[in-house]
Image 1 (cartoon, helix red, strand yellow):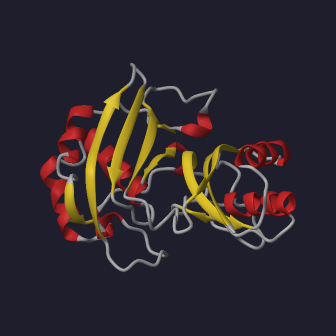
Image 2 (cartoon, helix red, strand yellow):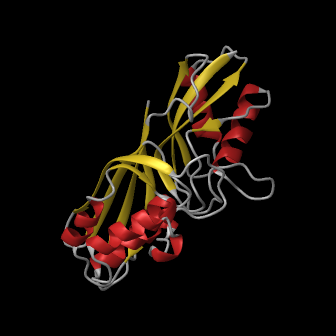
Amino acid sequence: MTNFKLVIEYDGTRFFGWQRQTDKPTIQGELETVLSIILNQEIKIHGSGRTDAGVHARAQVAHFHAETNITPAVLKKGVNSLMKHPIVVRKCEKTADDFHAQYKAVSKEYRYYILNRPDPAAVGRDYLWHVYRPLDVDAMNLCCGHLTGIHDFKAFENTGSPRSSTIREVYSANWTREDDEQLVFRISASGFLKNMVRNLVGTLKSAGTGKMSPDEFLKVLKSGDRTLAGATAPAKGLFLHRVVY
């Protein structure tokens, strides 16, 4: 048995998330189908975590075991040749037998993109959230200052995902204005709850429009009450950017 590690890029627009479903297209399902054909055996892959429907990835990490003499380079080329969907294997390598894409991860970085101008996008509209009202980046970053460290993020979690704890450690979180029109939110943490990044973005957007002060944002964080936080930002602006081991 060989343990293979994959780094995968994908456009999640037309998929129902990462996790395999019996009746809907998913990233995991498409990869397992193609890998099983190439390797002539049933393949089950394990990702670093689930991305929701419509969420994209630049560097999702997964692993799987297989009995084969095929080299990683040939396997990578084969998957990318057979794949008929916007899923690309960027790296494929043999790894230690005990490597696990989820349990060995020490941190993840997500990025969220906002187009902040009166007019919506004609090109690239599947990869950002259009917010027409001007956003105060300084106010949003003052709120981000409350996120770093170890906190209970229950106020920013949607129901429906099993977890033993809602406590996570955020290593960094900030907004930058890339140009006159685009804002980027970068957040790195030990792990994330269901819809946590999108709920944070939706709440931080409220701060950016003057509907919430940094002190009020802190109260929401400490409350553990999802109903006090902002709306969930659209999935299309979110990218899994990096997984660190």
